[in-house]
Image (tube, rainbow, N blue to C red; front, side, top):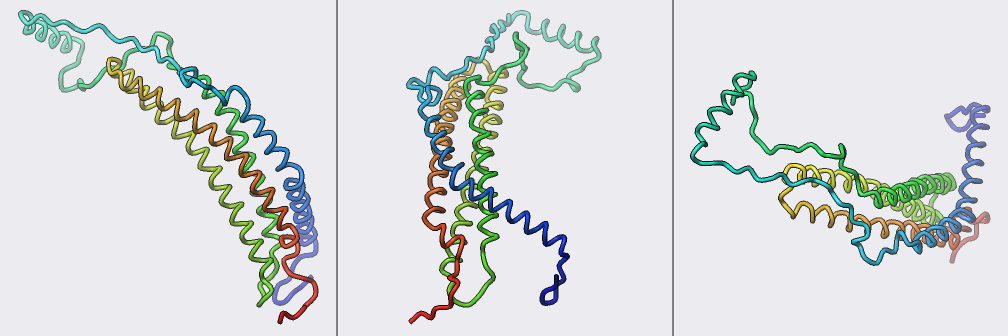
Length: 258
């Protein structure tokens, strides 16, 4: 097959046409069937006890870091202690020049300081929902883009609806991706705070900050699930209301407008 200045292999054209048909079938099924089912599923998820904790203290996670006993120095023996300490360092092959000052990190009795188990379980339920929305939006977006006709003068109202639909789908994809970034930032922030607690276990504010971070993340996860549901509702409603213009952006006849 050949067109103006471009020769297209018939076998490749057949495969491309089959791809377009597959995308069309998947996208239409997503809009008509998957989106409404998923929004109802997420609405039920929002009503589960795990997302309706009345007292946020229930999602707190205790961090077992023992506060070391204070070191009591006897002023009358300080000089002797310092000399003995330096002597031990030299005997062990360590001198002050090779030793770095700084806060000590104490060994944990349990080996590893665990994450907040309740939040981890909730995150593991929410993350697949985020990925699903991104993937499905990408499929529907490709379908609408393939329906956009060639550029012509006039009669482009339907095309503008297609472009607005693509823009909305792209926005939803970006927002969903930001939810994944938010989860990663939570883990990084909490890890830094827990590291501070192991170095400075006597500072209560670090303990309280971890609790605040956990509560904030719990609220954020509930908002994320709510937003995912709302995005399915919005996309389903928007596409169905404009389905005729999305599938047929230009009328088949060439009626003149007066």
